[in-house]
Image 1 (tube, each protein chain N blue to C red):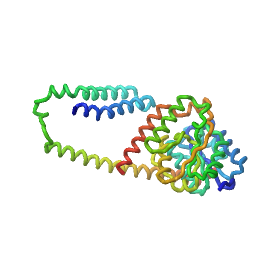
Image 2 (image 1 turned 180 degrees about the horizontal axis):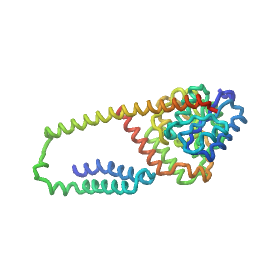
Image 3 (image 1 turned 30 degrees about the horizontal axis):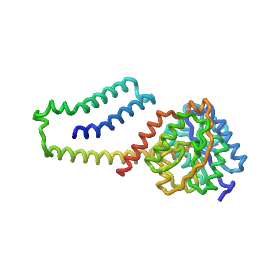
Image 4 (image 1 turned 60 degrees about the vertical axis):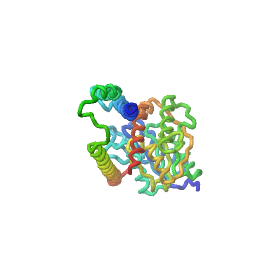
Length: 120
Length: 236
């Protein structure tokens, strides 16, 4: 059941990645080589995800995968993810603010220059 | 209050439109003059690599040259900022490729006063004669997405022919710079509580305007950008 949830959660993200790269290619914003590379990369991720259950069965019992309940490492990892999300969101807001300032500046300069050069 | 004494400005964002911009400018100047509207035509040359700027100037437009290419949304924002600074009563935006009839612009300026709307959208889909089925599908799809994301019901969310009241010029701002600004603008207008109306227009498709128009692949890009915008704003 948990594997079905895993696939259901991740499949839309992978499909979005496929749509994204296909659109970029059709809009001629990426080269054919980059398009091919991205398709292969996301196909591998998709295949690994779909076969994650047999893969786990094969790997279970190996020391690195033994974790029955939430460990300290899981808590640290989750906290780190939340913290990273916070940082990324802050950065995004700052970038947006800077973008807006640059856009406003560009607008004002363009209008002022047109006036100075005689608009007609 | 309906009056043809109001100062109007028609804004035309243009990128590499030297072939047709002169005719478009002359057409709209003639239509405004015929309707007795005092006003100007402003071409925002969005960093074109051809003679768009000089052609527009020769045809009688006020030209604002963007130093950098900033997209249709950026060019429209510059034009509306100019309209706000110069205290025009009503502003209209139209496409530079000649797909809008000058008479439809004048009709919109009349109509916004009659309806008392703050933002009026010229809809090509109320009567879609002449528009290809593919374009209809793309435009209807984007209007549906605009409805699903922002809860605004318009028949043509991507139309470039729009009329703005003075109140709208003073308050309306948006963040996106590409073609997705068409949907975002309507969303921002709704957030500000501005009244949004529609009126039917005729789209004129020539080989030139077809070659310059947006294809349906760009609709995917617009959708992605709008989704991103909608999601990111949930964390602001």
